[in-house]
Image (cartoon, rainbow, N blue to C red; front, side):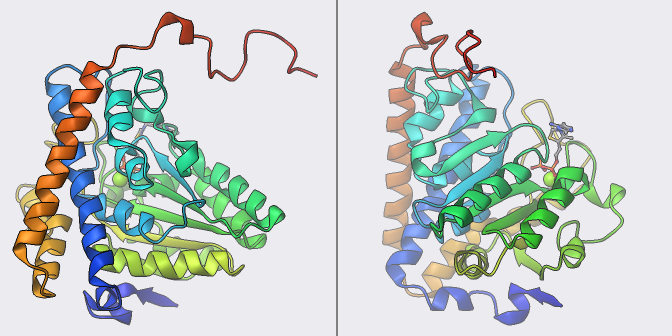
Length: 342
Ligand SMILES: Cc1ncc(C[n+]2csc(CCOP(=O)(O)OP(=O)(O)O)c2C)c(N)n1
Ligand SMILES: [Mg+2]
């Protein structure tokens, strides 16, 4: 079976079912994710963030659309490209920027950095730098929810390149045979580290074209259209919560910058970025809301609020010290003793 959100409903139709308040809240989230990610880039350029980082500029509608459809006690698992996903679950902006800057106010007290953002209290169950590693972990979380009967759902985000990793296939198979409450979300941004996914994959849609191998529906969504993402998120999360098992969603999107801080993305064909900038998720949603009668002043106000929030978070993170030496052995898996071995 082949289904895309576009086939089921015209673009924007999903939004028609949503209240104006919900949609402006979703726009607020989208704008905050974008502005904070842009700030992360500025802070790198100022050398205030050490190490590498992977920006998701251009992909925010996937994080915002899914997070808007999740229950607070649901779980998110994401990759090293996880700033937006963590923040979308409600992690504080100061906590995110502070963590990127290695400050004590960071989500992990400045000891984890960009690739390890986690906020367990908000259900953001970690960012994973090993491609594919978190899919089986999300399956484990879903098994625990099923076993305990909590109706929690695990939502697991990953890239197109992940679909050629063994753990992707193992996780999908196991989730299906046990009918686990997990939604796998492939953010197909056309590239892996430097390689186009199309150059190394036997099928056109790296996730959706594999779904039938695991008895799942073929779902492709426009990842730059937050209404479409929200609609698919609601449906797949709802199925998982109702005991109807896992889903695999392929969200087509594009990262505006290179893979990481070290990558100027020179391998992309001329004009490709410009085409995708025309389909920027913020641009699409702002136009959609204006078309639905939301006054421009309301949207301008949301944008101004978001910028103020970013400024405040940046100031708070800059004012926070690095973690003190006394924290070096805190919050680590083993304390150096052998008591945990059996
Ligand atoms: C198992 C493993 N192999 C290789 C790498 C190096 N690596 C880091 S990100 C990446 C590309 C992943 O591409 P994709 O899954 O499409 O995610 P995207 O970065 O596009 O979000 C690679 C090869 C890694 N971290 N882990
Ligand atoms: Mg990719």
